[in-house]
Length: 319
Image (cartoon, one colour):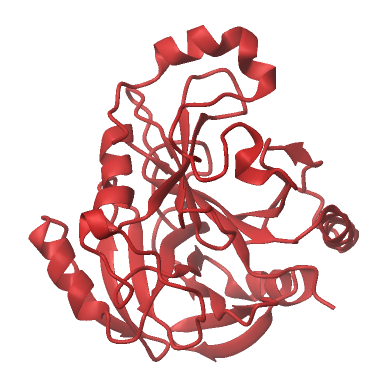
């Protein structure tokens, strides 16, 4: 029995905070779910969360806007490459027209039999909106931004991982996580992510032996990690023990992310995966239900550094 039920969230290191916020909330129509800071290290960096109005798992995209002089990531192989989100069947043309009208180059493509809209975040990270007929989730609407139910993003569809050796990644995906292989062709390998609610979510692995290795550090312009949802702590710990027992010892102890608990594991193909579950209080731990994502909040362990962190954060208008 799988310890995974869908994706929990996807996380990127982007560039400017303002362009990041505007891209996800105004262009793509997602809602601000949480505005906080990076919990690791000492550098003042925002951690921004976007998704459905209530912050449902499998809708969450998170970013570290990491605009630091001389620090920028390199996209390449042995790295997560593309963010995939689900849209209703027939919605592609709406998004092609909307994105191009806003100065974001977008085009229709087809891969693994699915029609998609391909474009990029302002910092360069590739994104695709995938037409899915296997997604019962209610589309995320944003009437202020002109996005209705017939076109709205439904949530995470998955991600593309590029690697030098897809054989090693295949073992990790099917034995360690484990996911179900659905397709294996010249286009790459497709894995189905189990989901108790019947939502079709996938991981796509492509082989890239030509690009240089991508960077793994926290640096702008790269995908940082892909988080899978274990639902609760018991499932998380069982899956962690299973993965470590197979010899994948580059796996972290549980980390407290205030709204969820996480463990991280580096795959053979370089992509970083997270095993996560949402705590009972969830996003309402420090903001009232219905008002999440409206204020800048700090975890309890940063209370003595709040003034210092605020001073070091990039100025941005989150409206």
